[in-house]
Structures are given as C-alpha cells and as structure tokens.
Length: 347
Image 1 (cartoon, rainbow, N blue to C red):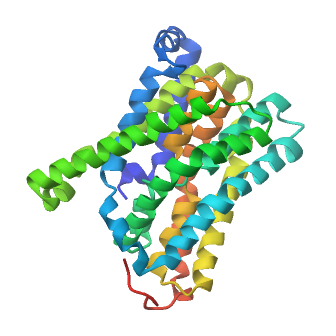
Image 2 (cartoon, one colour; image 1 turned 90 degrees about the vertical axis):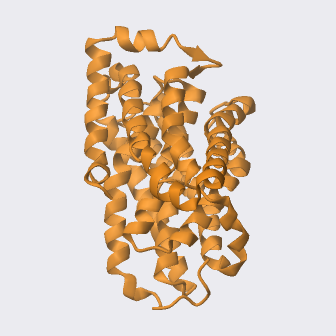
C-alpha cells in the first residue's frame, strides 16, 4: 500500500472539509452541478463513480471461477458471512445505535435515513480494496480473485432483494425499478465494460502487458474519483453537516463495531474449519470491508445527493481505511492460530 492509500482517511477528511466549505461559501457550484440529472441520478456524480469502479472491474478475472471446487470451504465462509449474516447484523447494530442509544441526539427522521445508508453499506461486500488487504496479510492472491469474482456475481442477484427487504422493514419505501436501475448503472455496466476491456487487451497484448502495464495506468483513477466524489457530495450536504456536526462521529460508531464483528465472525469460522491463514485472512477482510462506491452510488440514486443516507455511506469511506489497517495488524499477529499448510489445495 502506497503512502497515499495508507493515509486515505486523511485525504477523505480533507475532501469532506473542502466540500463543506464549497457548499457554505460557494453555493453556486453545487447548485449548477445539481442541474445535471437524468432519472434522478446526478450525472457528474455518476461519471465520477464510474471512474472509481471501472478500474476495479478490469482486475477481476472471471476465468478463475472454474477453480471454485478445488477449495470451497473458504468460499463458503465468505458467502455465508457476506450474504446471510452481514446485511442483517448491520441493520440490527445501526438500528440499536440510531434509534435507541443515540435517540436523544439524532432526530427520528435523520435516524431513519442514516439507517438506510448503513443498510446499503451492509449489503455491499468489498470487491476492490480487499486486494490491498489480502496483499498486506500475505493472502493467497488467486483465492482472493475467486472470492471477489463470485461476490461480484452474487451482488447482481442478491443486492436488490436484500436492500429492498431491509429498507421495507425500516418503513422506507423504495421502488424496485430504482434499485434495479442503480445496479445496472453502477455494477452491470462497469462490470461488463471492465470484462470486455480485459479480454480485448489480454488477447491483443498478452496477460503480462495487462497486469504489469495496462492496469497500472489506472492506479490512481479510483482514488481520484473517490476524492472528487466526496468533495461534490459534501458540497451538496454542507448545510446538513454544519447543522449536525456531531452526527459524523455518531454514524461512525455502529459502522466501526460492525466492521470488527464481521471480521471476527469470518476469521474465527475459518479457524474452526482449519483453513490456512492465506485463505482465512482475505475471507475476514472481504466481509469486514464494504463496496462503498456502490453504496454511495445507490444512496444518491435512491435518496439524492443531499440526503442523510448518502452522508452515512460516505462516513463509511472515512472509517474504513484506519479500521481495516487495525484488522490487518490483528490478522498478521494471529497467523500462528492457523495451520502452517492448507488442508486443501489453493485455488
């Protein structure tokens, strides 16, 4: 991890502050950009989110899925934790804090919107930064690719119904069409584009050129897109933040607790199954971290750029990097918990 990525939370905080200042002192900027919408989706934000997501999707090698059967236990851990546990624990923890513990600090209408943002984060497991966390824990790179590839495919099937169900439980009405359009815009299109780009470049120039040259040209695109998106989002939300500055910290509390909880559920399950550390660590990391780019995009599409729900999703960005670095240290210091050699062949 480079210095820029390592201190990503610092740059995120600075961009959030810059956005708030723009919204406060240069309100004409967000007002002008807010005019460019299509089907309730901000065109400038959509472009920046594609800039974030597209390079990630190019890195996913779906050919690796054919090797799933060689070592399925680690994938079972990933799938069960990400799709049968994580969305529902996120809902429960966020509800507990926003509506019970923090009820004297957060008005009910804001709590409902913050809960919606938390739900979107909980239903979107990480598909990009997990490559970084896997590398830092010396995870099996081939196995990590399979975990990411299968999660990308599962997102296409389960993200919409899970989000729809949990938002419905929260008494938040969201049209099915809006959710499906969001997934098409921010998952299907960049996923297909990334896959076609990968196939074209590999066929024309070879795998080595793709891995060592082509992909590296986009190394900073995701981070730049993220930071510019945050400036734009926080320029839209400047007034909301200035009126409720402590809410950033209040939103962060359940998100951080959820991150630690999910990591240890997956990590200890892998230990119980006697998986090797290079499989267990990425399994814990992919569940603990979030596909926050998708969560931010869908929050904007569903609730608007100025919504508290969108604010909750970007707080997830702010907390993720420092918390995940702590989990990396925990994983590396507990390597002795796991067998020295994998019980099954690596993918």
